[in-house]
Length: 132
Image (cartoon, rainbow, N blue to C red):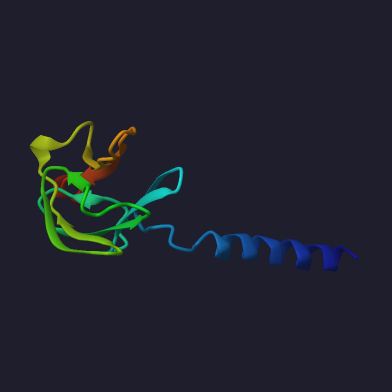
């Protein structure tokens, strides 16, 4: 009886550990309101951005008019825009960080209604802090 309990307990623990490993290290930010959604996904599985180092990112959108959608933030360079979203390269600049985070604002202008807008706060580290 004790042996079966411990076998069961070990299986449960292993299952919980494996299930929590998923995309744990990938930065991913999602904002939705009503039927609209924007998702910021970093393609290099980073836990944070690094000052001065370019990182590829993708802004995926749902039910958003891409003609009225704007993305603001220092160090952001548009690579491609299509119906599924926008692909960017983001290179954080230290002097533009707010409390160690890069502010990226997204807005869809909507006539006669409140704009769909959100501010993502992305963690950023300097190379000096990473090496220490």
